[in-house]
Each structure stands twice: as C-alpha cells, then as structure tokens.
Image 1 (tube, helix red, strand yellow):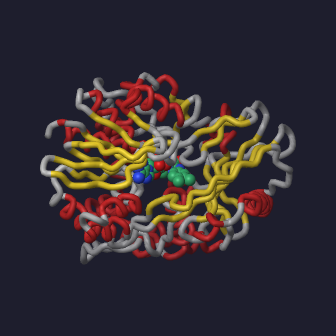
Image 2 (tube, helix red, strand yellow):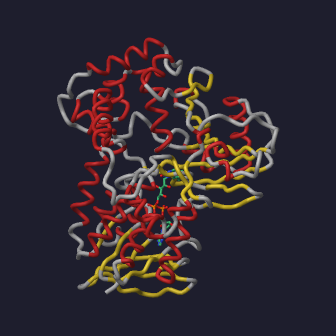
Image 3 (tube, rainbow, N blue to C red):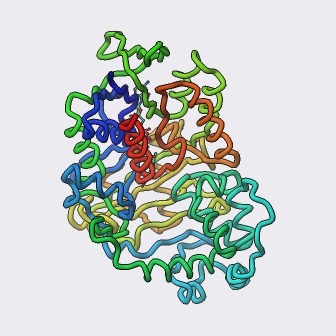
Length: 456
Ligand SMILES: Cc1cc2nc3c(=O)[nH]c(=O)nc-3n(C[C@H](O)[C@H](O)[C@H](O)COP(=O)(O)OP(=O)(O)OC[C@H]3O[C@@H](n4cnc5c(N)ncnc54)[C@H](O)[C@@H]3O)c2cc1C
C-alpha cells in the first residue's frame, strides 16, 4: 500500500522523492497551490527574490547526492569572493567579524576586556552536570558576557532569529556541546578538530567534492524545488489539504480536500511533514498528549524585505551582510548583501539588500502592514548601513510562523514525542520543527526517514 506524505516543503518533497527512487508507492499532498513551503524564489524586474531561505552550505554530502540524482549539481552557485567578510552592528557601527585568531586580536568587534575573556576560554573548567542550558548560559561560561551578547546572539539571530536566553544550546547548536564534551574548551576543540580534518584529507574519492561554500542555484533555491517536483510528477498533488487522519487496522485513512472536493485516501504509512501546529491539529483527535507535545513547539515570526537599488544610487556593500544583536534594540535582525553574495540575483550594477525583521525579539512585526514594514526596513538600513537612496524595488514577505525555536527543554520534548509516535504504527513526523531548521538538516532527516520506510 501507499505511503502518504503530507506537506510539500523541502522535507516532504525529499521523503517522497527518495521513496519514489526506491520504487515505493507514494503520494504527496500539499495544501498550497505550489510546492516548496518556505522555499520560494520569484523573478521580478530582473531581480531573483527569495521569500524564505537564501542559501545553504555546500558541505552536506546527502544534499550533494540529492542534487546529483536530480541532475542539478552543475547549477549550484557558490557565494562570490566579495561575500567573504561578515559584519556585526555593535557599539553604534558595523564592525567586521574576524576570520582567524590573529584577526580576532586586532579586531574591534569586541572591546579589549571582552577579547581577553574570550582567550581565557582555554581554561574553562569541565561542566559538572549535563543538564540542558540556554545558549546564553553556555556562552557566558565559555566566552564571557560581552562576547555572548554580541557574537553568540548575532550567530543565533542569523539561524533562529531567536532569543539567546531561551534557545537550548544542545538542541540548537549541538556541535558546540559536542566540542565541549570532547575537549572541555571550544578553542582547544576547534584547533584539534582542524588538525584532525587536515590529516584526514584527501577525502574518500567516491564521495562528491564539497566546496563548503555558502551556495544557491543559478535560478535561486527554487531550482531544487522544481527539480524535485519534476522528479515526482503527478505523485505530488497541490491544492490537496489533509483535513483529518483516521487510524485503521492496517494503516491510515486521510481525509483530503482537493480542488474543492473532499475525498478519502488509504495509506499504509503517513509522514507528517507539515509545520508543528498543523501536525498538532491533525493529531489532536487521535492522541491529545502527542498533539500537545508537538503543538507546544514555538515559532518565531519572520518578515523579509527585499530592497533593490538602481546602479550608482548606493555604494556596493562589502561582504555577505550584517547581523544585529538584540542589545542594540533595533528593528532589523540583519541584512544580506544579496547582490554582493550572488551577483546574478540582481540586474547588472544594481544593489539588492534582503532585510530580516521580527523573530522572537519582535514577533508583532509579522502582523504589521507591508507598507509600514517596507518603510521601517528602509529607515533601519539608513541608520545602520547609511543607505539613503530610494529603492527601485520593494518586496515584503511575512511568515507568521517563520522559524521553529528549539528552546531549553526541546530535546526532552523530542524524546517524549518519539515515544508517543512509536505507539502509532505507520505514523512518522519530519520537518524543521524537530531536529534542525537548515535546508541541509531537512534534507538529511528526510532521506533518513525515507530509508527507514523503504526497509520496512
Ligand atoms: C525567512 C526564512 C529564512 C530562512 N533562511 C534559511 C537559509 O538561508 N538557509 C537555510 O538552510 N534555511 C533557512 N530557513 C529555514 C528553512 O527554509 C526551513 O527550515 C525549511 O524550508 C522548512 O522546510 P519544511 O519542509 O520542513 O517545512 P515547510 O517549508 O514549512 O513546509 C511545510 C508544508 O506543509 C504544507 N501544509 C501545511 N498544512 C498542510 C495540510 N493540512 N495538508 C497538506 N499540506 C500542508 C505547507 O503548505 C508547506 O508547504 C529560513 C526560513 C525562513 C522562514
């Protein structure tokens, strides 16, 4: 019998495509009129605008295998060399984030006292207990208060748009906790890991060569969605909203509203690849404990404002972009210098900024009207980056549930969710709410789940 995948974002698409490749009967049901979920590239006035994610790191072998299977590896475009530098807005101006220990010593991103405190990280004592702690608590133990408020806050803002005081370090940044457990000090761990990586080179010849670079595709991230959509053909059904799930003796019945008609679909397995609140609504009639656990995963709303400028009206900004720590109390979370990073995403000579607002810091932004959000983004760019020109393109996208927040307690909640899901044969959850919000995470977990289902 068929596997039904509910949700046609990157997570659901990957599960369905992998199952199809393995010759399994699969159907994907997507409520919206288009596939892709958060991933949505649009061409406007010569600009390539991303409504959601802008890039992925080309360092995940599973993602590379997927692009190779889809025939789109040749369309991957790495960030331009001009995007090498990154900036943080701190103490009233944009300051470059140093890329090496000597550069860190020379840099003005932190005051001297804070830099000395970061260097003292080498002497961080071992952690007495393994209880979940916030990113801020972890940061203060290792790097001190100022580096936590400026640098760690900026880093998490760029990924979670969250709150450094509430995000769980282990759920949101597991690599940091692994480094601590293995080496006690993060600096020591980073030095040793770099040495180990160099010794391990060259890597296995059968694996594709990964650039490690921040990347997209020549037509934006939509290229990946379109390739998955083509590979799935009529297996992927849009305008098909799953209204209810009913457990059956040998599987599941799905009630689907498709193009105005309501119908039933029988499946041996169901994969819920929908946002957590939708999964909770579907699960509530059959298991309210599971529904409560899934539905209590919070989301940070996001606002994305793309601003395009005509040639010569504003300087070409250096680097990938900048992030703004919450202590600055600004509306802007950060901005990507999109035309510097991926020059083909703007017409020649034009400058494209992608501004992010909202997040856990200012959730109310996502319910603000688009004109006032556009005006606010322009005002913030003027104040923080000195951009005074009038844009020739303005595009505002609001995500009321933008990015799931892995707050302290997330891993315990996930363990409970796993145990509860295991009581329902043939039910599976995947997607960005659970074990990683990045595109690479969604692809890795989608592939893992498909493999598990294929061997069922
Ligand atoms: C503004 C923003 C910027 C980001 N930037 C980056 C970045 O630069 N790099 C990066 O790696 N990640 C980034 N992310 C994160 C990444 O984009 C997401 O984590 C990922 O795309 C989520 O994919 P998903 O398939 O798990 O969920 P979604 O994309 O949310 O897909 C879920 C799908 O389920 C569908 N659905 C809902 N209800 C039903 C129903 N009842 N029946 C059927 N279908 C239903 C929805 O319509 C949707 O298509 C960003 C996210 C946002 C919002």
